[in-house]
Length: 208
Ligand SMILES: N[C@@H](CCC(=O)N[C@@H](CS)C(=O)NCC(=O)O)C(=O)O
Image (tube, rainbow, N blue to C red; front, side, top):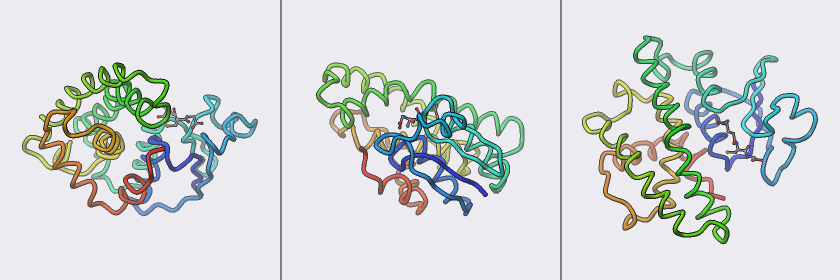
């Protein structure tokens, strides 16, 4: 049996829940993190010494790091196209997933904390700077989507799951007048919005 720990409003937890829904995988869910606490309890620290979510346990195997969890679950349970086995295609998917964590996440975190979590504590100049930083990064994905519907091989993959959750925050928290039009990105996001699994575990969850 698969168990997933993590509050539903966490972007990293949402990725995992979205993937499970997308591939029809059953799981037990336990709230943890944020207002639910628990991450510093001894049993949780034994599973994840970082005291963060998500964490999963699958038939006794414990794993943390959201994007690695996505790759593990997709490899074990998913249809191949969501995480293609061909080496170069797989590397392409992984490249975009790592890019989400390493390049896109830092400015997006500033925007999220500044506009949602601690609006009184993050100066608007810092938020502005983060938007200016994030925009050309999103532009790289906008270019990539110039003549294709999905990021890799024109197929819905883990790259969409990892980046879609971030895109939701970008479009919800940054007004149109604050950013350049990136039509390919917007069209791609509209395609994601139409997916029931993203609706359920992404856009219907208030940003808190
Ligand atoms: N790199 C980790 C980051 C995990 C992380 O920072 N999770 C946040 C939620 S998005 C967290 O647990 N924050 C503390 C809390 O919710 O109590 C991953 O991708 O899983």
